[in-house]
Length: 151
Image (cartoon, rainbow, N blue to C red):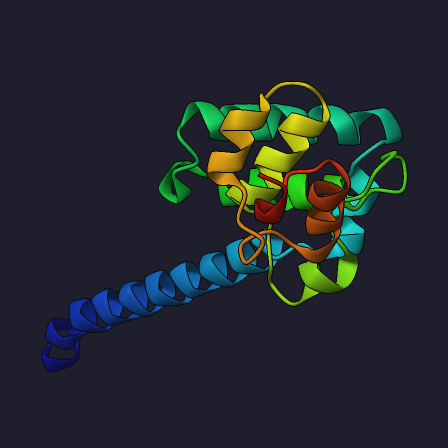
C-alpha cells in the first residue's frame, strides 16, 4: 500500500518533465525556422516579385512614419533581400551586409521610394542621412542629387 501512495507524484513529475521537453523542442524549432539565410530568402523571391515586395514594404513603412516598432522583422528581411535581388535594375543592398545582420533602413526606403517616383524630393531629403543609408543607396542618392551638399 505504501508504494501505491507514491505513484501519483511520479506521474505528475513525468508529465511536467514531458511538458518542459515539449516546450523546449518547440522553441528550438521556431527559432531555426525564423533564422532564414540570405540564400533561403533569395530562393523564395522570384524576379518580378522583388520589386513588388520592396515597394509594398517601403510604402507601408512610410505610412507608419518609418517607426522601427511598426516593422515586421520577417518582411524587413524579405525586403532587404529583394533590394539585393539580381532582377532589380538598381540594387540597394549587398549579401554581405545582410549576413552581418544589417537590414533595410528608413533612409534606404526613402531613397528607393524617390527613385520609383513614390516620394517627392523634399520628403526624401527629410529622411535621407548618409550615416543611416547603406553604401549602395548613398551612391544612388548622390547620383540623383539628394546629398546634403547639393541643397
